[in-house]
Image 1: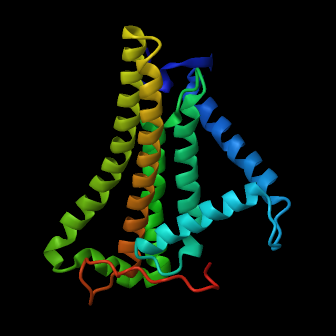
Image 2 (image 1 turned 45 degrees about the horizontal axis):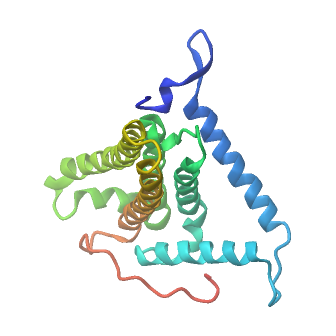
Image 3 (image 1 turned 90 degrees about the vertical axis):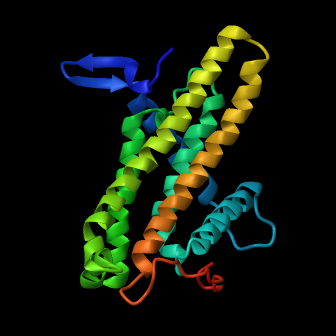
Length: 239
């Protein structure tokens, strides 16, 4: 039993290693790219659309609504980053039903990389929407003495984001492995179903937290409190 897919080494040359995390990460990205190409190559605006296009539109609209409910007024401009983040984690966790598939989200290096992307995106969107000066001043709110605490909070929540996803995925895989030894027929099936549900919930939580962090950095200014704006309904143009 492996605690992390990093321990499974397929090829090694010196310090260069090709482990299961890298292999299955690229496999998931390949699945997403090919699926996106096959589904979107024949998009149309007709009444009668393919089931794949209807399914894709439902996913896109749902993600944009969730982004708007997090407090971001123009969800379309965040769709590329947040939507990709959610689809990658969700697809990774869904593919665990395939035998011998090692989810990359069970590796701390993957979850840290995803959390680091969120860490970088927060000041990027914050500066883009508010300007550099007002964004930096937000760290001194409500008083200048809060500056070190706000910086520590920024770093700690990124670490918590990575550890939460890694801990949940690793513990789920270990429980299934233990039950597989105790009862190889019944419990693994039940736990696999629960594992899929947990994986989707974790993908949703990671996505929502990333949306809230970006919203907090994008909509708060020195005259506002830390309370987020209520969600605004999307206009037909934004949809």
